[in-house]
Image (cartoon, rainbow, N blue to C red):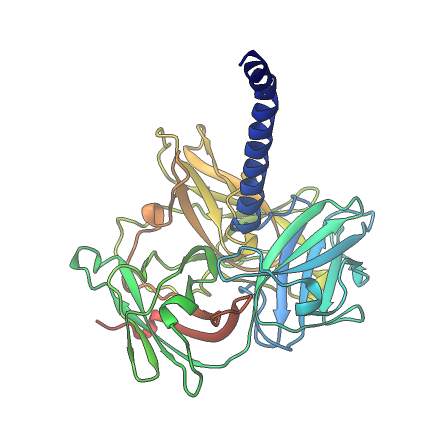
Length: 435
């Protein structure tokens, strides 16, 4: 008996070690799985990289890149330095919810990535020196992207550190997507929200168990940060999937975007009060006022987008100059820990220190200066509370009459498939909004 007890006591440390090792292994496995299947966010660029745009035949400058399968496109950006640094790129495939897909690179890419971006040109006749980089896909190394779905392109510097990332989508149209914009059905929000009705016509395509295999992404004004995802069809009529929700597909209507134009750096344009030349040109905009308590006024905009344009230039890629644009907002100082930001497609709707306004006690205004390339810009003031919750309408207001653009993407993963295909794309504006 003594010998058995002695052996049992000796085995205790061994058993404890085995239990601890198993627990550690399980914890590491769970962390790895959580990391591998967590949603991926975009990495914002440093301040010396500006004007990141996708350009293709069907995707205008400044818009969210939604590209047809097989269509060529360009990723372009400016580097505001004089040393012409080297940059490299990689492209990864993702599921509809921006978790990494199970595909290996050879399954969605013909060729290779992780090559240097070789096409760049230096600025000409501009106060701000910069280099304009242009990556075209396909190219000699990356010959084609062969699968539809979500993608993220990552730009690295020569030290293999990520400089910035951008999301884009490639679709292969296999079914029809009807989009209709309605006033909010809930009378509590009928004056401030817009609802999106969707009809997916599968045609001759057999959608197996659509409530499980079909996913949608609804995007307002190309802003992925406020997009609605994961909404399932309410019911099926023949070969159509119907989405007519009250709350699940509703967006705050917000207000028309504010805008300004700096195509002429030597003279005041739309929204610009005066110009000042220091090291580079400074464009001071007229002070803005909150519009939440004002009546709605239709003011045509481009739904948050921007367009690089400059007079007396032949090539805006390298001849358009950069100016410091000074924004100011007449708004009382917030004392509840909230912050005010200015954003739009020009900065990918990011909320960073570069576009956060600070309160100037002397002027009694919120102010910020942002270096932007010459052009026509839409922008909006938004509030983020101390808990990180975004409120787009606190300063601008929410009006059901606002003209907004809505895009609907339809993803499909057949039973047993390994990735989400992007098989449908529909678009509508609230110009023809109805009850």
